Image (cartoon, rainbow over all chains, first blue to last red; front, side, top):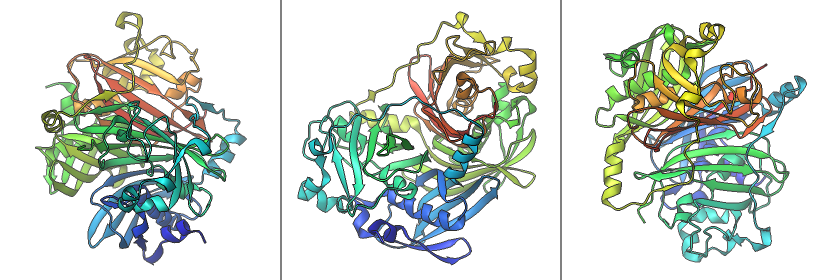
Length: 274
Length: 274
């Protein structure tokens, strides 16, 4: 069993309640990574809807910072029927809600099969990120020790950032409001829909590429799952459109090794102080 | 009082419960417009958090189609403190949840003042839509009668669609996955944050511009409010990035008459049958 599968596992403890454990290894600055918390909640959703194993949409409001240790995930089913199911969920620690979630679950495979059967067309209006080759990108394994001590999650995966934008070792941002990188788990576990929820939140905040290197607390994050990723490295692109009035949006696209767009997310976050 | 203000008004009926009325005039095909329902919920949030009158983020899962008639909005406050408040909310009719919502409320003005005081920078990486002049765009007032009978909400506002993309009168889509138009309320009421929630859902589905003219049920819609709009016409742009496997994303940007990006939204929806 891979490290990630072990870490996101939940255990049913009652009707719609699950026990989880947030690992110290996923801490980033002030708390446990928000994307990882989404994966834990999605893990409970998968237990709840075994025939609808994919969280097509997850919207999360971040209430308080998650801390390493036990957590309870509650799932409140709103509607199940036909090809989708919807639920509210939350991740709670010590009586405090960390994240509140709204989710739509389904089987991506069942959707794709039905759509193919009716001959539905496909269109794509966004381009796969152009990334420098793996060997020219800067690896999170080589991030400065002081950064790693502040961001233990950097040991969970290998992130290779394209040197055209801000990286671990460069404080010269491109000022283009974009960060792109390659991602895979440290132990080589291949990506799956559960992992994409984490992957959409592992790059540095896009504000780093605008010279603001502080922590950027997320207010809201919505993820749309668009495909089951093929094995291999993922390409991740963060972009912002508007930094204004103390708030910025950060969109994320995740592309798999076959060039398929497999996830899209957007968050609204607070502009860092520095 | 404008028609819209009258229609979105809610009346407190208890701790966290509000009475509302969904007007027949906002019906679009199978139900009451989803964006309008968001405005009604935001109206209840504004009553709940008078010093945090703006829903900075609203994420909604569409459970069942809203119908004209009485509705109850429930607001469950999750956290209030500092500059933001968060809540879960739902709009219910006849015991059936129409939409479930997660929201973050704040004062955009307070955010902007604080950010200006610390000299925070602004950046924008998206362009105001290039729209044909108002007089060259095709007005919803001139939409075919059979369309108007199916979409009564077309009488609530004036929407002028740029003829470069699909319009009311043309069945020749640009196949670019984009629709842009001008928007204002029929009675000339100026836009405000509450109205933007409706405005992000009034254009035809972006799939119209790909030759698919059917109804496109929304699974999830998230809106980020980015500014208080200036008086005057709004510019609205819908774009999709990926139509695949029976699902498509539709993003919306709303720009005010001064050229400010005032709202961003993205939804995941089902590809129409036709």
